Amino acid sequence: MKSFHFALLHLALLTTITISVNADQPPPQFIQFEPSATMGALYMPDPDIYPAPHVATLAMHRDSNFMSHISTQEMPKRGIVALGMNPRCQNNEALCTPWEHNSLDVKQGVELLRSLPGIDTVILIGHSGGGPTMAFYQAIAENGNTLCQAPERLMKCPDYIRDLPPADGVIFWDAHLGNGINAVRSLNPAVMNDEEIMNSGAAPRLNPRLDPFNPDNGYNGANTSYSDEFIESYLEAQSSRMNKLIDIALERMEQVEAGTYSSKGDAAFVIPMSDISRLMRIDRSIDHSTVNPHKLIKNDGNIEDCCVVDSVRPFDIDPQGHAEFWEGTRMLSLKSFLSVRAIRSTNSMTEIDYCSSNNSTLCMVQYISVPVLVSAMTGHYFVRNSELIYDFTASQDKDFIAVEGATHGGNPCTACIPEGQVYDGRYDNAVKNDFDYLAKWINERF
Image (cartoon, rainbow, N blue to C red; front, side):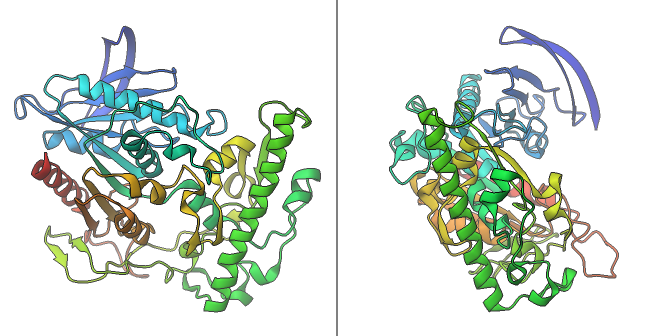
């Protein structure tokens, strides 16, 4: 690997960028989009090996910087142009509401790639929070903005979210189901006094019968095993807490719009104990595998296609973190909560109104017709989520692949081994196997 430091003039902007790239790969080009926070890095294949690439991929997250995303390193090695983008919402979702503005960033990336000589195919890569981002973009591009203004949406998209040029395919790469779904599943439902907390800064009062870290409920560190009764009560209580938070936010939003609230335009909405309480991360038997048999790329490159796919994820929860300010608290605004973190449900795992939010992968993939590939990393806890994305996707050309021992970021999971064992290289080929499959899938279709 080699670090390139260079300056170039692109789109009338002289900028300097330092990014690590493969030694035989041309240095990336920095792209300045609008607004100024929206940026990109464009990576080209080695022209001596791939003189005329015709496919490009675009990776962008909801609020993280993907300018050096793993796809920007791996796709050019396989003859595919790659654009990694930084959205306007980087690390500040409250500032850039409505969330649907992200689609305008994706639009600029698609238009840039379409303008490159020889490029006739653009594939979106939705990784993690890029899943709902790219699902929303492609669904609106194919169906128009009436889809994101449906009456059941908690917040509707603005009228100017329109005329989005569609991509030719979408790869959901260890994508999640939506930030609202993540949020309701991450809430600690033991909290009983949200309104008191918000109104007067009171300390959270907890119902010990719903505390996931209470040993009486089954908590036992990496060996946690909850009863079916506790799980059902917990998931229903998560939905109940989320619905109460939504009602509080909607009421305050009405006051803001009427000019009777303490602030204008928007207001702070801080939710304690709203993260690190996802049961599937504590009791690893929950959503541990796919429901149906699917293809699994083994470390030796062979594809096993016979069985359900199991996650090999390790236990990674700090039981103290849910009560900590920086780890367990969500600092939002009313608008960012309602447009990004809110979704209606009666059971946080099985009874979710997926289309009550625009930030919902499972809602939007029902309106996507272009080819779709779902790639799941078995070293993470999105294996079942990935299967749901595959199941819900409307496209008639869809594929599912799981990568043995890959982390959420795609790298070998050295922690995904039985307790007491030392990592022995069993997942070392995860990156190569995954991107070889992705490139093969692209080349077979485009």
